Image (cartoon, rainbow, N blue to C red; front, side, top):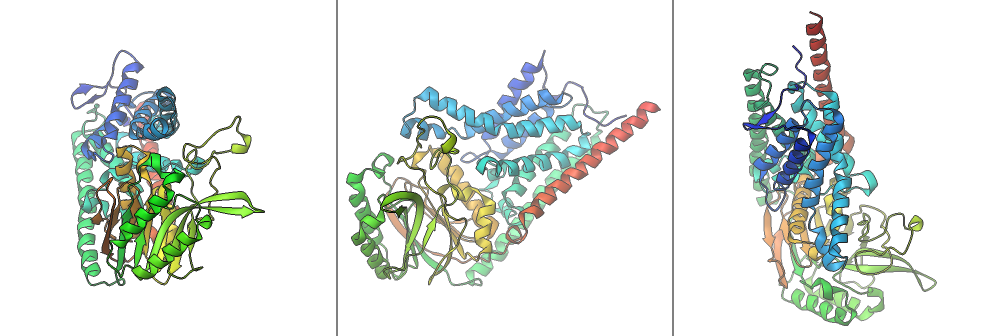
Length: 539
């Protein structure tokens, strides 16, 4: 008998997953996608996330690829629309778009991102794999779809499934092996195993095989947790002995400037003085003091006296002072290019290393394909001129060491942060202004920053204008966190991590090859199942 997907009406946890027509499946897929959102920060309801994906796998069982793709699309539409609902704050609250327009744009984004789950589900149904192939094909296809989403159209790898594990200290340590993609693959593997446990056709998939796959899922989860427990103990002991270098005394300065006041020119001087006063509350020596993204909400070259004050402050701190600022490059006294930059004041006038953000936010910092766009499109953020991208991921070096700079959006791209580690970054610095977005975005963005620390085994200091400002050690543990919406400056000794994790040393194509090979093994199972079915039909 063939082991291929059976047309037997599927049941999940005793409930029928079928109705009088495809509409029931489509509705159930949307509900499952809504449930999956609860697995993301700030909720991290991982059992519900696994159940949601298992439901999707059962819903596309025994149906044509078109209906399966439609189920995947509606699953993704719910997952991404609800998961990115914080965009309404920036589009409607700060962008001042009418609420119906903002909702339409949110759903439009969700629909574009839903094409990836649609591709995943459609391919899976088109292959008609036997049950035993699901634990191989499902994680491989999903992770490869996430990798595709991270690069197409400048990439948008927000809410990858693996971030659900960010707050589970044992399991999340395995990110130093394969990045957040490994955790996404783990989630989909567990969902496939759960699907096999409740597989509707008992004749096609006997109890013994169900139990084997169920135990395999438990064993894999246990193995990764065991690795994480060992890694935590090993690195904790080495960090306590300062094996990898002398800790960096690091200070976070959180200005908590209301977004509607931030770019008001009348308050620029007041906000600057506020940051200076907060910094004055620190206790020197401080190796590195960090202000937030565009904490200097003015063009620094117009205010040389303020730049002198920053150098004077750096000398008082006996270290470097890093701050965000908009930088303008002029040609013949006319604006030529505007950059979202970081400036590192070292106490020596003229010695100010600079980093320009290279991965810009579409529609927030620039309008894609502007020269071919019709009408006068405006960004949703302050200013009418598009930002220009910097040259790429680049370490900033000074007497205090090598820091890997990340501005806002850049922290969500694992491969780009990996390039900073390869360039010799000793720690990571992430500045952002999440005041533009709703509360859930802050938690989601924080989870991504935590994963970057674990993947690269480097400490990460993060300053957000209104929060969440935090310092992670190389194990992803919080060693300092400032309360949100509070004007505050605090300092902490930040350890130097080992770097050179497997995630860093293995090239990106190596991870893609792993998931591709896993998919090939699944395809071999499909071929064997069809061959077995062909022999059975002839007999």
